[in-house]
Length: 57
Image (cartoon, rainbow, N blue to C red; front, side, top):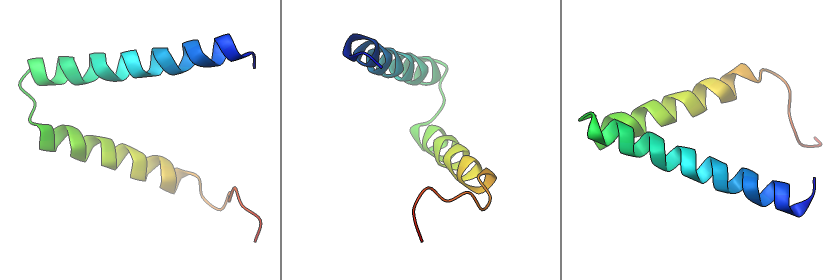
């Protein structure tokens, strides 16, 4: 992947994350709820991987 595409991708991810946080706080969602939703999503994705390990055993 060329460097400019990679940098644009990173900038887009940061921008969307900031927009998501702004929207959730503007809607009155507590920070603890946002953190729990993020942690639950990360745990769900981790558990959905099953036995696929990305390291050599």
